[in-house]
Image 1 (tube, helix red, strand yellow):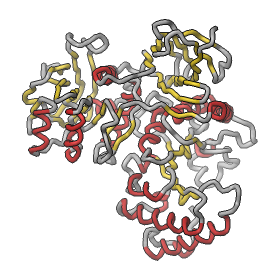
Image 2 (cartoon, rainbow, N blue to C red):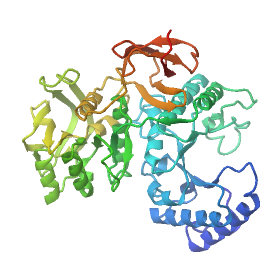
Image 3 (spheres, rainbow, N blue to C red):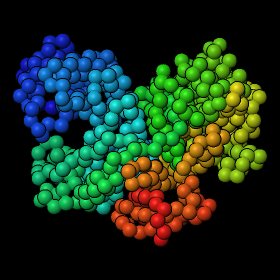
Image 4 (cartoon, rainbow, N blue to C red):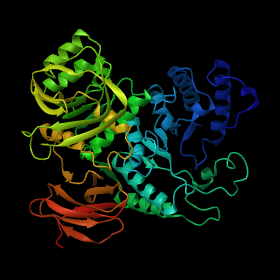
Length: 528
């Protein structure tokens, strides 16, 4: 963040200062472009902290100008810019989409956000935020997790090490291009600004100030070895899309969308994040939070359902009586809503139908709406009511349209969960509705884990299929696993090297995971 004298007091987005910045960049790149240690050019570390742009197009113009200047001098090195969680959660107008065309890869810095008051970063939900940021930035270009970490001035070194393990292997499963920690070493002094006022900032290193290694360093070394041993590999992606609301940069909507991602993960789904205008035909299941925010993508959602897709959506506030929207509600979702919004406050209980299949029948789903939320109750429905509220009103509705189907929640359940601390550790079972949607969609899931607290992924390497399991709880988990590799053997390749287990003829086996533990199992045909 060094600012030369000619830029002090002037906007970095102004034509004059952009021209001067380009001149500076041209000199630096020209001098160092042939140095073998240069990997890439990072335009700036979190530029919005230097100056917040008035709108996102200012950010795009700044990025384009500097990137084009670099490419005039050096076409051999990729270009990125270091963005952080504020560029995702709506606190900044320096946003992802407008700058994407000018970068060769994304660099994202993630420190825990979107957590309710009183919930800490090692919570089940908190450890998912880096993975969500990686998925959020995947727009056809690699995504580097360029910064992440916790301070051992706030948490124990062992807790920080556990956080590293969960975040790194989750980044691997979610298609991250690599990880870099913040930071290498603790600070040697805490008696000067800003460290004299923010002591935890002195303790983000993976090594201590005396150079000795913390547990996080050991975890990074182990992770690096595993990645080296299994490379090259590909992430086996699913057939689930999460359609971003057009107002996702509204903090409340962004927080709810993040929780939608978490619920997908609890259901064993790994959604690809989709934006307005992107194709939907590659998916079997489409998750659509805040449907009324998708007024301009209704045609695409309807086409997806009619051609055989399954949609999981929530309505929430924001209904506008547009003809096309009303037609979609009646014909695709088989319901009409009250034009006047109602308010729900306090405890909310939903009860699922006894006619549903095992796993989703007779569920009692409890939510807190302490701050209250507006929604539009169902006026009438021609679909099947899957769940009712405590007053007997339709809360979740199933409908068919063309070759596909939809499950519609009248209330934005993901929004209600977003504001409740430790909602998932306290036994929320909303994920079971998502699992039911996946079954209706006919998803071919090669791996199903009973516990919702274990993230699961599959990698394909030259050595064969690799199954990755990450326990996101601070306590041990014992869970059943079902896979289509019936009768095969599994060999541990991370920590428990050499240990083997047999998959049953029915494709099932038991898995035990310590708190925050990762296991990678290679599928083999060798005998135990």
